[in-house]
Amino acid sequence: MRVTTIILAICLLFSTIAAADQTSCAVCGMHPDAQSRIQIVLNDGTKLDLCCLNCTANYMKQHPNTKILSIKAADYMTKELIDAKTAFWVVGGSKEGTMSAIAKWAFAKKEDAAEYIAANGGLITSFDSAIETTSKEAHHVHSGHDMSHMQPGAQLIYNPAFGDDVFHTHPAGMWMVNYKFMYMDMNGMKSGSSNVGTNDVGYNRHKQYSYMMIPTTMTMTMQMMMAMYGVTDELTVMAMGSYQTKKMGMLMDMGPMSKSGVTTEAPMETSGFGDTDIRGIYKFSKYLNGSLGLSLPTGSINEVTAMMGKTYRAPYDMQLGSGTFDLKPAITLSMTTDDGNWNFGGQAMYTWHPANNSNGWSYGDNLQAMTWISRALGPASAWFRLTYNDTGSIKGQDSEIAKIITGAPMPDAVTSNYGGQRLDAILGISLTKGPFSFGVEGGVPVYQNLNGLQMKTTWFLTTGIQVMF
Image 1 (cartoon, rainbow, N blue to C red):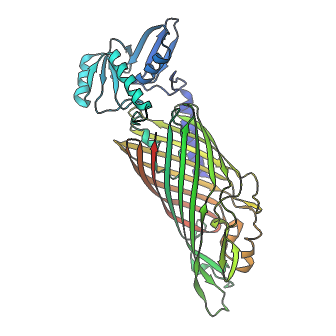
Image 2 (cartoon, one colour):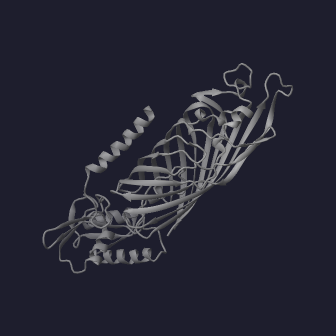
Image 3 (cartoon, rainbow, N blue to C red):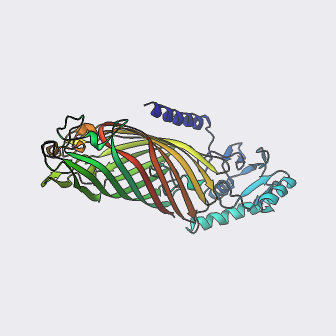
């Protein structure tokens, strides 16, 4: 649990930072960046803080009759507020702007603007011209032709290949559709944090583990389709379904009295649709969102397999669903640097199985804590993350699966041989092209402490493609 404490402490630190700054954009709710912030002062003295010129243009469009006393913008060089209408505005260039593909920065001094243009390109223009460019860009984006209005680091959050979803929100009216293919490889067994070889397991051979059916390898593939929609700028809803294929290789040991000894058994295999997740995600601030998911039991818990000439209900890890309605609350903290090049954060999620399923059992509850850091590299991004899972043993028992224990004993039929702790280290990379993103990530466990005797995870891979519109 020490790893959990460290990761949750990181999340708490992020939360404290987020809570310390209550200033938010009057239009979109985001925290204004130091170099792009704007302040509108109304005739009655009311001050409105805005995150960028885009939100300023939106506010002026939505409130055409509001009397504005002054508009101030952050000087790109000093980050101090200056008169926006007398500032030298640089539009365009190689550097992307805040919430905009076309950069728009204010400068108090013309020589500073010229120096910026020499390094990054762009043109000096007036405040009115910069506002006009913003309005045209917004119309182009809302027409559904271009998703490049996102910040440079947007692909760090809206990522196609994260094996563990980083829950985030989308602007109102925006869709994101994502397809992922996941592969997991398991090879060999562990008890606690110690490896257990197949020679240490044998039926009635006076060994520590007496099982007739000995798992040696297991692979799982999962194809997932997810859709997200921004109901409002603060609320996003999502739904995700999956199709799974599981395959387990086994040895059969009939005991010391058997002439056949230890033989290779035909692999056990199941496949079909898994459970369906629905979730609502609410943005509390630029950094913090909370979400609540509900897992619907659409995956089968009645898969069968043949062993030793008999048909049994397949063990728990070969079933396709949980058979229960599961609640999945989560809290996510995500921060992007002012230049949009770095993103880092943490997420904690709990999966609660409130009752046993119709077959008399339920998976153990799970606490997942994740932290990551990612870097934008132009249209590409790369990331490193750590994910820690702490899962309880199976509760209850399936009377049909229990028949394996007496007929063809194997560790996967024993409920105490499930759950434990695992820490994964994961690297990934993705590429964004217009509204499309492609990505791949791979990981390995760096720590496993498993309950009872179980197959151990060796490596896993996720690839994904998505479109936003």
